[in-house]
Image 1: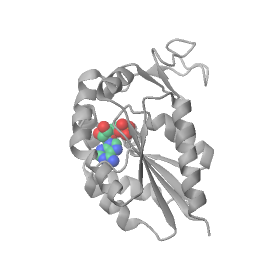
Image 2: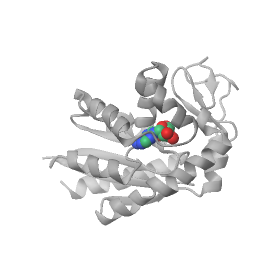
Image 3: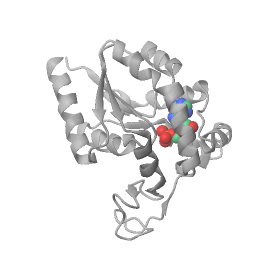
Length: 223
Ligand code: AMP
């Protein structure tokens, strides 16, 4: 029986997780579970969770494990996750990773992809990142600008905005938090022999090809 695929994208903020996640989900027909997006939804809906999360996110700090896990577990219980899913931005602490492991079923195949990008490159990428407020497409003022400048050329008209947590001082704080709280997960998953490191400084297309080759090879060898 083919195992249900659980993909985890690890990597510092701005390492290209979001871009790769979208393409991988499309390619493998998996739901894209981004805890950052789930939290931003809570913020937009002005829920109690959203109010608490907003302040922390704006400071570049992590939202408490219990809150993130509550919204993620809820999302994981939906039907579309039955055949597998991709996690983008989760886990971010060893405690989150341990909790996820406890939830893991026998018929699930865990594949952790770690995107490695030097910090200075991350800062350059993040401060130029723009997102479409309508369709969520991701642009970069230097590397992949929209042909419509401040509007989206994919959905033709959505306004582009910079996430508040992509400002340089916030990005540097997020990198510090990543090194301190999330980077230990590389060792955590490495020890469990489910992690593969990728050079995230190559072009998104090249990286996508490498990620797919690796996922396909794992899937083949486990059949
Ligand atoms: P992201 O969109 O993944 O970059 O997440 C944006 C922000 O949401 C992060 O900087 C954190 O403040 C918060 N966040 C997202 N995922 C998590 C998580 N798994 N644990 C704690 N905080 C999170």
